[in-house]
Length: 239
Image (cartoon, rainbow, N blue to C red; front, side, top):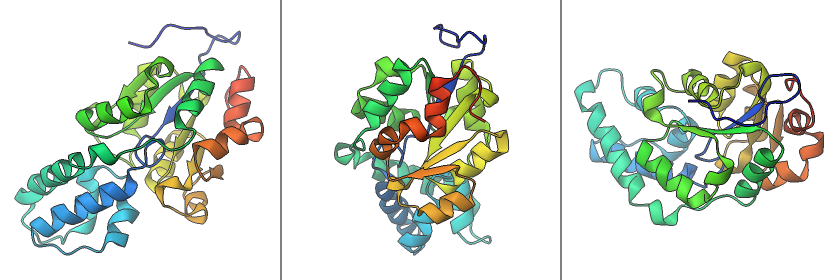
């Protein structure tokens, strides 16, 4: 059910969608190490650089992209389960990026509906939400079960928009991976990229990012000149 709250004079709710892993939480390289370990448990030696490049995809797509086509695919669920267990062992090490909570608070205070458009497992998302300590500023959140197809398909963004009652034309998306940018582009949503997840600015721009910042804090510092700032200031969409 979409949250109830102030609707701008134009009559359409405006909103911002946030990726979580690598965007608000410093977890991209932990995912990389966890996938590396999971692959090795099944006898696959996949370079970490190749794995990191695919982090941000759904786990099913990541496995399919990195493992040989002729493998025994019946073992894929074991690989994904191993990744989940290895990642969970690092929960105590997870930290929010500087400015993450403040950015969520600023968006909420400015009247935007705020959604965490995450494709993480529900239990991983619960841990990350606890670390963010920002539930008062979050109007909706998605997890892996909310999308049939994972990124770069836009399904999880569609689910997040539905969760907060916002149309794509009235939203901005913030993410850290090439796959985030592609998912947003599929819906025509302007995508702001952050490099704190480990992907370079050039690659993110090539994938469709309209702006690139080092992380949440730098976006906050430049909010007035950002597409997000225009969304906060106006009653129409960000375009």
